[in-house]
Image (cartoon, rainbow, N blue to C red):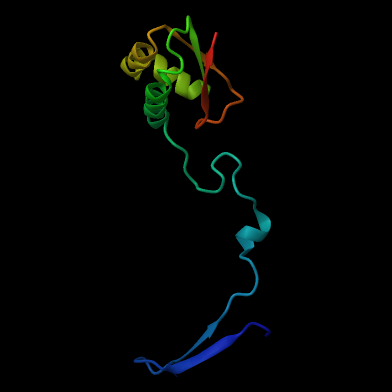
Length: 120
């Protein structure tokens, strides 16, 4: 065996412990690739979390988009549904920051954690 090993002293159970250093990647890493949706993190932000991030972005951009006649928000369909139903009050806050109606445009090509504002 080519992997480096280390022999330790006898433990409390009377056994000799031998450790080996892993030299190859795990089978999972060899056979799989990271999830393109979550980049291997195993988690994506919830629709509710994204709604609050949209509000924070609206606050930051409110001066830049002041005076715009209409603003469009492109989001994933799942986030769009949340903005129209359970997070409607939050969407009203976004519109208040811009001082104009915001059109929600669901885009199935967007990742759940992506969104953008556009002036129309």
